[in-house]
Amino acid sequence: MTAVRFELTRKRMKSIRLRVVPPHGVVKVSAPHGVPLHFIEAFVADKADWVCQQQARIEQLPPPLEIDEAACRAILTTRVPALIAYWQTQLGVVCTGWRVRKMKTRWGSCNIKTGRINLNLVLGALDDALLEYVVVHELVHLHERYHNKRFYTWVEKMLPDWREREAKLESITL
Image (cartoon, rainbow, N blue to C red; front, side, top):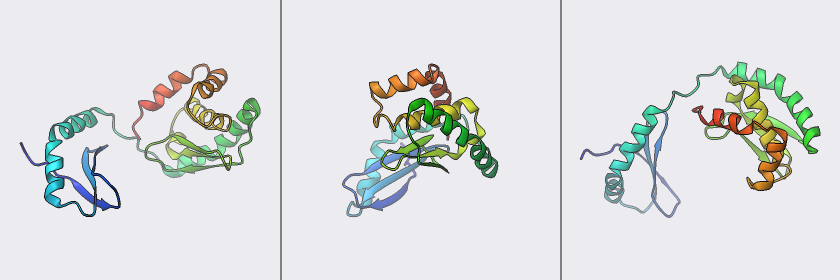
């Protein structure tokens, strides 16, 4: 068995965390400050088969989207205000503001306390239907905080084809 190369970060934490990160399958380990290096190396070596499986899975993923950040930001600046204005009235909610952010793992987020939503910059490079789905999804959180039955009842009522839109988003590598 060959040794697994990894990047080590020491943090204030209680246990070791092992991740295989797309798009290149880099192995990253986070560990508490006091754990000896030989223990961490043994931990990673013990997980070598799992690491290889994850790297093989990552190789099969489509490459991440290459985007023009300025163009995506401009597109979102023109499209989002109308979407929010329309869907707030349909949902009976008030969105106090929105912003575009570069996000690595999410398409959007909602701060329920402030009524603000955040949208992933990459949405500017995607189909309008996908942007609309993310806007509706985040605005529904102003009605229902959690992804429960009530939440999905709202989404289903507003966008009956939401499952297809969500499946398209899930197939895209950020």
